[in-house]
Image 1 (cartoon, rainbow, N blue to C red):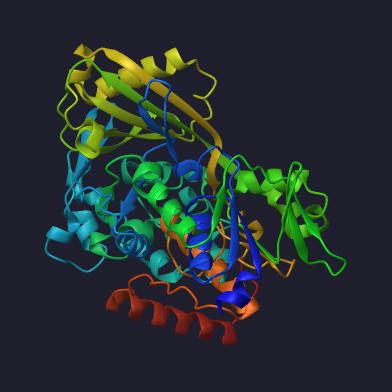
Image 2: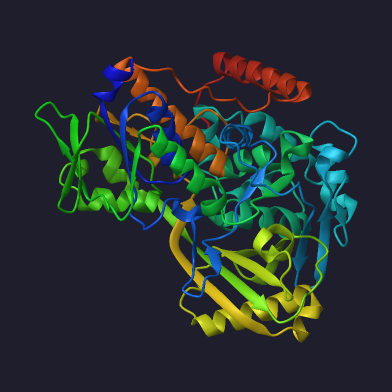
Length: 503
Protein backbone atom coordinates (compact mmCIF):
# COMPACT_ATOMS: atom_id res chain seq x y z
CA UNK A 1 0.00 0.00 0.00
CA UNK A 2 2.77 2.41 0.93
CA UNK A 3 4.69 1.92 -2.32
CA UNK A 4 1.58 2.37 -4.43
CA UNK A 5 0.27 5.38 -2.52
CA UNK A 6 3.70 7.04 -2.40
CA UNK A 7 3.59 7.22 -6.19
CA UNK A 8 0.48 9.38 -5.97
CA UNK A 9 1.33 13.05 -5.54
CA UNK A 10 -1.27 15.00 -3.58
CA UNK A 11 -1.06 18.78 -3.30
CA UNK A 12 -3.06 20.43 -0.51
CA UNK A 13 -3.57 24.20 -0.64
CA UNK A 14 -4.00 25.99 2.69
CA UNK A 15 -2.59 25.06 6.10
CA UNK A 16 -5.53 25.61 8.42
CA UNK A 17 -7.54 22.93 10.20
CA UNK A 18 -8.81 21.47 6.90
CA UNK A 19 -5.49 21.41 5.08
CA UNK A 20 -3.51 20.06 8.01
CA UNK A 21 -6.18 17.42 8.64
CA UNK A 22 -6.12 16.20 5.04
CA UNK A 23 -2.33 16.28 4.83
CA UNK A 24 -1.84 14.46 8.12
CA UNK A 25 -4.14 11.58 7.24
CA UNK A 26 -2.82 11.11 3.70
CA UNK A 27 0.79 11.23 4.90
CA UNK A 28 -0.06 8.54 7.47
CA UNK A 29 -1.40 6.40 4.62
CA UNK A 30 1.86 6.73 2.71
CA UNK A 31 0.83 9.28 0.06
CA UNK A 32 3.35 11.78 -1.31
CA UNK A 33 1.69 14.90 0.12
CA UNK A 34 2.79 18.51 -0.22
CA UNK A 35 0.95 21.22 1.72
CA UNK A 36 1.26 24.77 0.37
CA UNK A 37 0.55 27.78 2.61
CA UNK A 38 0.63 31.39 1.37
CA UNK A 39 1.50 32.86 4.77
CA UNK A 40 4.87 32.60 6.52
CA UNK A 41 3.36 30.18 9.03
CA UNK A 42 0.70 27.44 9.07
CA UNK A 43 -2.72 28.09 10.55
CA UNK A 44 -4.66 30.54 8.43
CA UNK A 45 -6.89 32.78 10.57
CA UNK A 46 -6.20 30.57 13.60
CA UNK A 47 -2.42 31.05 13.40
CA UNK A 48 -0.37 32.98 15.91
CA UNK A 49 3.12 34.47 15.87
CA UNK A 50 5.60 36.55 17.86
CA UNK A 51 5.92 40.31 17.46
CA UNK A 52 9.33 41.93 17.01
CA UNK A 53 9.26 42.53 20.77
CA UNK A 54 8.73 38.82 21.46
CA UNK A 55 5.06 39.05 22.47
CA UNK A 56 2.63 36.35 21.33
CA UNK A 57 -0.29 37.54 19.19
CA UNK A 58 -2.85 35.87 16.94
CA UNK A 59 -5.67 36.79 14.60
CA UNK A 60 -8.36 36.32 17.23
CA UNK A 61 -9.07 33.90 20.07
CA UNK A 62 -10.80 30.66 19.07
CA UNK A 63 -12.80 28.51 21.47
CA UNK A 64 -13.16 24.74 21.42
CA UNK A 65 -16.72 23.78 22.24
CA UNK A 66 -18.01 20.68 23.99
CA UNK A 67 -19.14 18.97 20.73
CA UNK A 68 -15.68 19.26 19.07
CA UNK A 69 -15.26 15.52 19.41
CA UNK A 70 -12.93 15.04 16.44
CA UNK A 71 -10.54 17.83 17.39
CA UNK A 72 -10.40 16.60 21.00
CA UNK A 73 -9.56 13.11 19.72
CA UNK A 74 -6.84 14.56 17.47
CA UNK A 75 -5.04 16.40 20.27
CA UNK A 76 -5.20 13.26 22.40
CA UNK A 77 -3.66 11.23 19.56
CA UNK A 78 -0.91 13.84 19.22
CA UNK A 79 -0.22 13.53 22.95
CA UNK A 80 -0.97 17.21 23.57
CA UNK A 81 -2.61 18.94 26.52
CA UNK A 82 -3.29 22.39 25.03
CA UNK A 83 -6.60 23.28 26.64
CA UNK A 84 -7.81 25.06 29.74
CA UNK A 85 -10.59 23.55 31.83
CA UNK A 86 -14.12 24.43 30.71
CA UNK A 87 -14.83 28.06 31.62
CA UNK A 88 -17.75 30.21 32.71
CA UNK A 89 -18.65 33.18 30.52
CA UNK A 90 -20.36 36.55 30.78
CA UNK A 91 -22.16 38.92 28.45
CA UNK A 92 -22.00 42.71 28.67
CA UNK A 93 -23.81 45.68 27.13
CA UNK A 94 -23.19 49.42 27.65
CA UNK A 95 -25.49 49.06 30.67
CA UNK A 96 -23.05 46.59 32.27
CA UNK A 97 -23.23 42.87 33.03
CA UNK A 98 -26.24 41.24 31.33
CA UNK A 99 -25.90 37.50 31.86
CA UNK A 100 -23.57 34.86 33.28
CA UNK A 101 -23.55 31.33 31.92
CA UNK A 102 -22.77 28.31 34.11
CA UNK A 103 -21.00 25.13 33.13
CA UNK A 104 -24.05 23.44 31.68
CA UNK A 105 -22.55 19.96 31.97
CA UNK A 106 -22.52 20.42 35.77
CA UNK A 107 -26.21 21.33 35.95
CA UNK A 108 -29.04 18.82 36.20
CA UNK A 109 -29.73 17.68 32.61
CA UNK A 110 -33.00 18.99 31.17
CA UNK A 111 -34.52 18.24 27.76
CA UNK A 112 -33.23 20.67 25.18
CA UNK A 113 -33.70 23.63 25.03
CA UNK A 114 -34.94 24.10 28.61
CA UNK A 115 -31.51 24.19 30.25
CA UNK A 116 -30.34 26.88 27.87
CA UNK A 117 -33.19 29.17 28.91
CA UNK A 118 -33.33 28.40 32.64
CA UNK A 119 -29.75 28.04 33.89
CA UNK A 120 -28.07 31.29 32.71
CA UNK A 121 -28.32 34.14 35.22
CA UNK A 122 -29.95 36.98 33.32
CA UNK A 123 -29.74 40.38 35.01
CA UNK A 124 -32.32 42.27 32.97
CA UNK A 125 -34.05 39.87 30.55
CA UNK A 126 -37.45 38.84 31.98
CA UNK A 127 -38.60 35.22 31.82
CA UNK A 128 -41.56 36.19 29.63
CA UNK A 129 -39.13 37.35 26.94
CA UNK A 130 -37.15 34.13 27.14
CA UNK A 131 -40.35 32.09 26.84
CA UNK A 132 -41.21 33.92 23.62
CA UNK A 133 -38.53 31.79 21.93
CA UNK A 134 -40.41 28.53 22.49
CA UNK A 135 -42.34 28.67 19.18
CA UNK A 136 -38.95 28.77 17.48
CA UNK A 137 -38.55 25.14 18.53
CA UNK A 138 -40.61 24.15 15.47
CA UNK A 139 -38.03 25.75 13.14
CA UNK A 140 -35.25 23.87 14.95
CA UNK A 141 -37.16 20.62 14.42
CA UNK A 142 -37.97 21.41 10.80
CA UNK A 143 -34.36 22.36 10.04
CA UNK A 144 -32.68 18.94 9.98
CA UNK A 145 -29.48 20.06 8.19
CA UNK A 146 -30.58 18.35 4.96
CA UNK A 147 -30.10 19.97 1.58
CA UNK A 148 -33.85 20.54 1.36
CA UNK A 149 -33.93 22.28 4.74
CA UNK A 150 -30.99 24.51 3.82
CA UNK A 151 -32.73 25.57 0.61
CA UNK A 152 -36.01 26.29 2.46
CA UNK A 153 -34.47 28.50 5.12
CA UNK A 154 -31.50 30.00 3.29
CA UNK A 155 -33.63 32.52 1.37
CA UNK A 156 -34.86 34.06 4.65
CA UNK A 157 -32.87 36.31 6.96
CA UNK A 158 -32.39 35.28 10.56
CA UNK A 159 -34.18 38.43 11.71
CA UNK A 160 -37.22 37.57 9.57
CA UNK A 161 -37.27 34.05 10.99
CA UNK A 162 -37.23 35.20 14.62
CA UNK A 163 -39.94 37.77 13.91
CA UNK A 164 -42.15 35.22 12.15
CA UNK A 165 -41.97 32.89 15.14
CA UNK A 166 -42.88 35.60 17.65
CA UNK A 167 -39.54 36.15 19.37
CA UNK A 168 -39.83 39.30 21.47
CA UNK A 169 -37.93 42.38 20.36
CA UNK A 170 -36.03 42.46 23.63
CA UNK A 171 -35.00 38.80 23.46
CA UNK A 172 -33.82 39.27 19.90
CA UNK A 173 -31.89 42.46 20.73
CA UNK A 174 -30.31 41.23 23.97
CA UNK A 175 -29.78 37.54 23.20
CA UNK A 176 -30.19 36.26 19.65
CA UNK A 177 -28.57 39.20 17.85
CA UNK A 178 -25.44 39.03 20.05
CA UNK A 179 -25.21 35.27 19.41
CA UNK A 180 -25.33 35.89 15.68
CA UNK A 181 -22.72 38.64 15.86
CA UNK A 182 -20.17 36.39 17.59
CA UNK A 183 -21.31 33.09 16.00
CA UNK A 184 -21.96 34.03 12.36
CA UNK A 185 -20.14 37.38 12.65
CA UNK A 186 -22.95 39.47 11.19
CA UNK A 187 -26.26 41.06 12.29
CA UNK A 188 -29.45 39.07 11.84
CA UNK A 189 -30.67 40.97 8.80
CA UNK A 190 -27.48 39.92 7.01
CA UNK A 191 -27.48 36.25 8.12
CA UNK A 192 -29.11 33.30 6.43
CA UNK A 193 -31.84 31.80 8.61
CA UNK A 194 -30.53 28.34 7.67
CA UNK A 195 -27.03 29.19 8.89
CA UNK A 196 -28.46 30.75 12.05
CA UNK A 197 -30.46 27.63 12.88
CA UNK A 198 -27.54 25.33 12.13
CA UNK A 199 -25.09 27.37 14.21
CA UNK A 200 -27.43 27.89 17.18
CA UNK A 201 -28.42 24.23 17.24
CA UNK A 202 -24.85 22.90 17.09
CA UNK A 203 -23.27 25.28 19.61
CA UNK A 204 -26.15 25.86 22.02
CA UNK A 205 -29.39 23.98 21.63
CA UNK A 206 -28.77 20.38 20.51
CA UNK A 207 -27.62 19.25 23.96
CA UNK A 208 -27.35 21.08 27.25
CA UNK A 209 -23.51 20.95 27.55
CA UNK A 210 -22.86 22.11 23.98
CA UNK A 211 -22.27 25.75 24.97
CA UNK A 212 -19.44 24.78 27.35
CA UNK A 213 -16.06 25.79 25.94
CA UNK A 214 -12.34 25.40 26.58
CA UNK A 215 -9.56 27.65 25.31
CA UNK A 216 -6.01 27.09 24.16
CA UNK A 217 -3.44 27.80 26.90
CA UNK A 218 -1.40 29.79 24.37
CA UNK A 219 -1.66 30.48 20.65
CA UNK A 220 -3.15 27.61 18.66
CA UNK A 221 -0.14 27.82 16.37
CA UNK A 222 2.31 27.13 19.19
CA UNK A 223 0.21 24.70 21.22
CA UNK A 224 -1.33 22.58 18.42
CA UNK A 225 -0.20 23.42 14.90
CA UNK A 226 3.56 23.38 15.51
CA UNK A 227 3.65 19.85 16.99
CA UNK A 228 1.06 18.75 14.43
CA UNK A 229 3.27 19.92 11.55
CA UNK A 230 6.21 18.08 13.12
CA UNK A 231 4.12 14.90 13.20
CA UNK A 232 3.12 15.41 9.54
CA UNK A 233 6.73 15.85 8.47
CA UNK A 234 7.75 12.80 10.48
CA UNK A 235 5.12 10.82 8.53
CA UNK A 236 6.67 11.98 5.24
CA UNK A 237 4.47 14.98 4.38
CA UNK A 238 5.94 18.32 3.26
CA UNK A 239 4.63 21.62 4.65
CA UNK A 240 5.86 24.61 2.62
CA UNK A 241 5.08 28.20 3.65
CA UNK A 242 5.24 31.43 1.60
CA UNK A 243 3.77 29.50 -1.34
CA UNK A 244 0.86 31.49 -2.77
CA UNK A 245 -1.06 29.41 -5.32
CA UNK A 246 -2.14 31.31 -8.41
CA UNK A 247 -3.16 28.59 -10.87
CA UNK A 248 -3.91 24.94 -11.43
CA UNK A 249 -2.86 23.22 -14.65
CA UNK A 250 -5.12 20.70 -16.41
CA UNK A 251 -4.19 17.95 -18.82
CA UNK A 252 -5.90 17.32 -22.16
CA UNK A 253 -8.57 15.24 -20.39
CA UNK A 254 -9.49 18.06 -18.01
CA UNK A 255 -7.80 16.58 -14.93
CA UNK A 256 -5.52 18.54 -12.65
CA UNK A 257 -1.85 17.80 -13.29
CA UNK A 258 -0.06 20.55 -11.37
CA UNK A 259 -0.41 23.49 -9.00
CA UNK A 260 1.39 26.74 -9.79
CA UNK A 261 2.93 29.07 -7.18
CA UNK A 262 4.58 31.88 -9.10
CA UNK A 263 7.57 30.24 -10.79
CA UNK A 264 7.19 27.00 -8.83
CA UNK A 265 5.15 24.15 -10.31
CA UNK A 266 4.08 21.20 -8.13
CA UNK A 267 2.96 18.15 -10.09
CA UNK A 268 -0.15 16.49 -8.71
CA UNK A 269 -2.32 13.43 -9.19
CA UNK A 270 -4.98 15.08 -7.00
CA UNK A 271 -5.48 18.51 -5.43
CA UNK A 272 -7.29 19.47 -2.23
CA UNK A 273 -8.19 23.13 -1.71
CA UNK A 274 -8.46 24.06 1.96
CA UNK A 275 -8.62 27.85 1.90
CA UNK A 276 -11.17 30.47 2.89
CA UNK A 277 -13.83 31.81 0.51
CA UNK A 278 -11.77 34.94 0.01
CA UNK A 279 -8.62 32.92 -0.63
CA UNK A 280 -10.40 30.68 -3.14
CA UNK A 281 -11.81 33.70 -4.99
CA UNK A 282 -8.27 35.08 -5.35
CA UNK A 283 -7.02 31.77 -6.74
CA UNK A 284 -9.90 31.60 -9.24
CA UNK A 285 -9.31 35.21 -10.24
CA UNK A 286 -5.65 34.52 -11.02
CA UNK A 287 -6.22 31.14 -12.65
CA UNK A 288 -6.27 30.43 -16.37
CA UNK A 289 -8.30 27.23 -15.94
CA UNK A 290 -10.77 27.49 -13.05
CA UNK A 291 -12.94 30.32 -14.50
CA UNK A 292 -14.05 27.91 -17.23
CA UNK A 293 -16.32 26.26 -14.62
CA UNK A 294 -19.49 28.01 -13.44
CA UNK A 295 -19.11 26.54 -9.94
CA UNK A 296 -15.85 28.45 -9.46
CA UNK A 297 -17.09 31.60 -11.19
CA UNK A 298 -20.13 31.65 -8.92
CA UNK A 299 -17.90 32.01 -5.87
CA UNK A 300 -17.98 35.72 -6.71
CA UNK A 301 -21.48 35.66 -5.17
CA UNK A 302 -19.99 34.77 -1.78
CA UNK A 303 -18.41 37.22 0.63
CA UNK A 304 -16.35 37.49 3.76
CA UNK A 305 -16.58 39.48 6.98
CA UNK A 306 -13.94 41.78 8.42
CA UNK A 307 -12.37 40.85 11.76
CA UNK A 308 -10.33 43.06 14.08
CA UNK A 309 -8.13 41.39 16.71
CA UNK A 310 -6.53 43.50 19.44
CA UNK A 311 -4.35 42.64 22.42
CA UNK A 312 -3.68 45.14 25.22
CA UNK A 313 -1.10 44.96 28.02
CA UNK A 314 -2.07 47.02 31.09
CA UNK A 315 0.06 48.35 33.93
CA UNK A 316 -2.08 46.76 36.64
CA UNK A 317 -4.15 43.66 37.22
CA UNK A 318 -7.91 44.06 36.78
CA UNK A 319 -9.92 41.19 38.24
CA UNK A 320 -12.62 39.89 35.88
CA UNK A 321 -15.62 37.80 36.86
CA UNK A 322 -15.00 35.31 34.03
CA UNK A 323 -12.20 34.76 31.52
CA UNK A 324 -14.39 34.86 28.38
CA UNK A 325 -16.95 37.58 27.66
CA UNK A 326 -19.20 38.60 24.78
CA UNK A 327 -20.46 42.15 24.25
CA UNK A 328 -23.26 43.80 22.29
CA UNK A 329 -24.81 47.23 21.80
CA UNK A 330 -21.57 49.22 21.57
CA UNK A 331 -21.54 49.70 17.77
CA UNK A 332 -24.35 49.06 15.27
CA UNK A 333 -23.87 45.75 13.42
CA UNK A 334 -20.67 44.88 15.31
CA UNK A 335 -20.20 42.30 18.05
CA UNK A 336 -17.08 41.76 20.12
CA UNK A 337 -15.56 39.52 22.74
CA UNK A 338 -12.83 40.02 25.31
CA UNK A 339 -10.70 37.50 27.15
CA UNK A 340 -8.60 37.50 30.29
CA UNK A 341 -5.34 36.02 28.98
CA UNK A 342 -3.86 36.01 32.49
CA UNK A 343 -6.41 33.29 33.24
CA UNK A 344 -6.23 31.49 29.88
CA UNK A 345 -2.63 31.62 28.61
CA UNK A 346 0.25 30.08 30.52
CA UNK A 347 2.75 32.78 29.53
CA UNK A 348 0.61 35.54 31.09
CA UNK A 349 -0.41 33.75 34.27
CA UNK A 350 2.10 35.64 36.42
CA UNK A 351 2.13 38.97 34.60
CA UNK A 352 1.80 41.89 37.04
CA UNK A 353 -0.70 43.63 34.76
CA UNK A 354 -3.76 42.44 32.85
CA UNK A 355 -3.40 41.13 29.31
CA UNK A 356 -6.68 41.39 27.43
CA UNK A 357 -7.60 40.12 23.98
CA UNK A 358 -10.55 41.98 22.41
CA UNK A 359 -11.85 40.75 19.04
CA UNK A 360 -14.42 42.56 16.88
CA UNK A 361 -16.59 40.87 14.25
CA UNK A 362 -18.28 42.55 11.29
CA UNK A 363 -15.73 45.26 12.00
CA UNK A 364 -15.79 46.90 8.57
CA UNK A 365 -16.36 50.38 10.01
CA UNK A 366 -13.48 49.95 12.48
CA UNK A 367 -10.70 48.81 10.15
CA UNK A 368 -10.01 52.30 8.69
CA UNK A 369 -9.27 53.70 12.17
CA UNK A 370 -5.63 54.18 13.17
CA UNK A 371 -4.07 51.78 15.65
CA UNK A 372 -4.08 54.53 18.29
CA UNK A 373 -7.80 55.20 17.74
CA UNK A 374 -8.60 51.49 17.92
CA UNK A 375 -6.65 50.99 21.14
CA UNK A 376 -8.37 54.02 22.72
CA UNK A 377 -11.77 52.65 21.71
CA UNK A 378 -11.02 49.19 23.10
CA UNK A 379 -9.82 50.72 26.38
CA UNK A 380 -12.97 52.85 26.58
CA UNK A 381 -15.31 49.92 25.83
CA UNK A 382 -13.54 47.70 28.37
CA UNK A 383 -13.95 50.40 31.00
CA UNK A 384 -17.67 50.56 30.21
CA UNK A 385 -17.97 46.83 30.93
CA UNK A 386 -15.54 46.75 33.86
CA UNK A 387 -15.06 50.24 35.42
CA UNK A 388 -11.73 49.23 37.02
CA UNK A 389 -10.13 49.52 33.57
CA UNK A 390 -10.54 53.30 33.79
CA UNK A 391 -7.61 53.42 36.22
CA UNK A 392 -5.44 51.03 34.17
CA UNK A 393 -2.94 52.36 31.63
CA UNK A 394 -2.18 50.62 28.32
CA UNK A 395 1.55 49.79 28.27
CA UNK A 396 1.66 47.94 24.94
CA UNK A 397 -0.80 46.83 22.28
CA UNK A 398 -1.24 44.83 19.10
CA UNK A 399 -3.82 45.52 16.37
CA UNK A 400 -4.43 42.92 13.64
CA UNK A 401 -6.84 43.64 10.80
CA UNK A 402 -8.24 40.65 8.90
CA UNK A 403 -10.31 41.95 5.95
CA UNK A 404 -12.83 39.40 4.65
CA UNK A 405 -11.39 36.99 7.18
CA UNK A 406 -14.39 34.76 7.91
CA UNK A 407 -17.19 33.38 5.76
CA UNK A 408 -20.35 35.43 5.39
CA UNK A 409 -23.33 33.08 5.41
CA UNK A 410 -25.60 35.64 3.81
CA UNK A 411 -29.20 34.93 2.78
CA UNK A 412 -29.16 33.09 -0.54
CA UNK A 413 -25.51 32.08 -0.27
CA UNK A 414 -26.06 28.34 0.16
CA UNK A 415 -26.62 27.73 -3.56
CA UNK A 416 -23.08 28.96 -4.27
CA UNK A 417 -21.25 27.02 -1.57
CA UNK A 418 -19.19 24.17 -2.98
CA UNK A 419 -19.44 20.48 -2.11
CA UNK A 420 -16.33 18.40 -1.51
CA UNK A 421 -16.28 17.23 -5.13
CA UNK A 422 -15.83 19.57 -8.09
CA UNK A 423 -16.28 19.48 -11.88
CA UNK A 424 -12.58 18.59 -12.07
CA UNK A 425 -12.63 14.95 -11.07
CA UNK A 426 -9.36 14.94 -9.10
CA UNK A 427 -9.84 18.31 -7.36
CA UNK A 428 -11.54 18.32 -3.96
CA UNK A 429 -12.66 21.03 -1.55
CA UNK A 430 -12.51 21.41 2.22
CA UNK A 431 -13.01 24.17 4.77
CA UNK A 432 -15.64 25.56 7.11
CA UNK A 433 -17.70 26.88 4.16
CA UNK A 434 -17.90 23.59 2.26
CA UNK A 435 -21.23 21.73 2.20
CA UNK A 436 -21.23 18.63 4.39
CA UNK A 437 -24.00 16.70 6.15
CA UNK A 438 -21.95 16.21 9.32
CA UNK A 439 -23.69 19.04 11.20
CA UNK A 440 -20.63 20.64 12.81
CA UNK A 441 -19.45 24.25 12.53
CA UNK A 442 -16.33 26.40 12.60
CA UNK A 443 -12.99 24.73 13.44
CA UNK A 444 -14.51 21.29 13.93
CA UNK A 445 -16.25 21.49 10.56
CA UNK A 446 -13.05 22.63 8.82
CA UNK A 447 -11.10 19.71 10.29
CA UNK A 448 -13.82 17.21 9.38
CA UNK A 449 -14.05 18.40 5.77
CA UNK A 450 -10.28 17.99 5.53
CA UNK A 451 -10.66 14.36 6.59
CA UNK A 452 -13.57 13.93 4.16
CA UNK A 453 -11.43 15.27 1.31
CA UNK A 454 -8.64 12.86 2.27
CA UNK A 455 -11.16 10.02 2.17
CA UNK A 456 -12.20 11.06 -1.35
CA UNK A 457 -8.55 10.82 -2.44
CA UNK A 458 -8.33 7.34 -0.89
CA UNK A 459 -11.56 6.37 -2.69
CA UNK A 460 -10.10 7.60 -5.96
CA UNK A 461 -6.81 5.73 -5.80
CA UNK A 462 -7.89 2.74 -3.72
CA UNK A 463 -4.95 2.92 -1.35
CA UNK A 464 -4.95 3.38 2.41
CA UNK A 465 -7.50 3.34 5.20
CA UNK A 466 -10.12 6.04 5.39
CA UNK A 467 -10.14 8.45 8.31
CA UNK A 468 -12.75 7.63 10.94
CA UNK A 469 -14.97 10.65 11.59
CA UNK A 470 -16.94 10.83 14.83
CA UNK A 471 -20.51 11.95 14.06
CA UNK A 472 -22.25 14.62 16.06
CA UNK A 473 -24.13 13.34 19.09
CA UNK A 474 -27.59 12.08 18.07
CA UNK A 475 -30.59 14.32 18.62
CA UNK A 476 -32.41 13.92 21.90
CA UNK A 477 -35.42 11.55 21.72
CA UNK A 478 -38.08 14.28 21.73
CA UNK A 479 -36.29 16.09 18.87
CA UNK A 480 -36.01 12.83 16.91
CA UNK A 481 -39.71 12.19 17.42
CA UNK A 482 -40.61 15.73 16.43
CA UNK A 483 -38.54 15.50 13.25
CA UNK A 484 -40.06 12.14 12.33
CA UNK A 485 -43.60 13.49 12.73
CA UNK A 486 -42.73 16.67 10.89
CA UNK A 487 -41.30 14.72 7.97
CA UNK A 488 -44.39 12.52 7.80
CA UNK A 489 -46.65 15.57 7.72
CA UNK A 490 -44.52 17.25 5.07
CA UNK A 491 -44.46 14.13 2.90
CA UNK A 492 -48.21 13.66 3.31
CA UNK A 493 -48.81 17.28 2.42
CA UNK A 494 -46.91 16.90 -0.84
CA UNK A 495 -49.20 14.05 -1.90
CA UNK A 496 -52.49 15.90 -1.35
CA UNK A 497 -51.65 19.56 -1.86
CA UNK A 498 -50.24 21.34 -4.91
CA UNK A 499 -46.61 22.35 -4.58
CA UNK A 500 -46.99 26.07 -5.22
CA UNK A 501 -45.80 27.65 -1.95
CA UNK A 502 -42.47 29.39 -1.64
CA UNK A 503 -39.97 27.08 0.05
